Image (cartoon, rainbow, N blue to C red):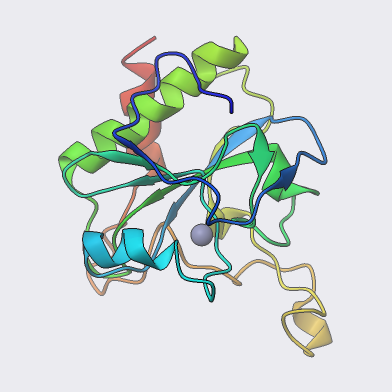
Length: 186
Ligand SMILES: [Zn+2]
């Protein structure tokens, strides 16, 4: 089992999430929310055999980090994306929240700290990280496996996380906000 130096994990719950060897080197970090409404249910869901989602880290609303998979393995968090082999290329970090409830300040701080530890571990900076720190919604594309509508294939719109769809347009997780927090640590 691999652990990332400097990355604070409050709980490890490995082996329930599907894991497979990396198909491409790590090169970026993808941010998500998991669409949960309560943290305790969120953590339980990843132990459910019906769960096909797989983030490496789930960040609870009090900022605690649950490690769901060995960070050295790929998990099914990204699916078809603009970047090929996105499940491998991107680490998957999710906030336990949904499309309406804003990520909390401790959650955002913890997500940023997780990113900083990953950057340091790989010797990247916010400027040199090869595939960047991205939201799922700016990467996830439609493919024939997801829709028969040929006109959509290859286009964005398959996912709305981590921005969400609030009427007031506030993002659930502002990727820019996380990037600002990360930059402040460098
Ligand atoms: Zn996602």
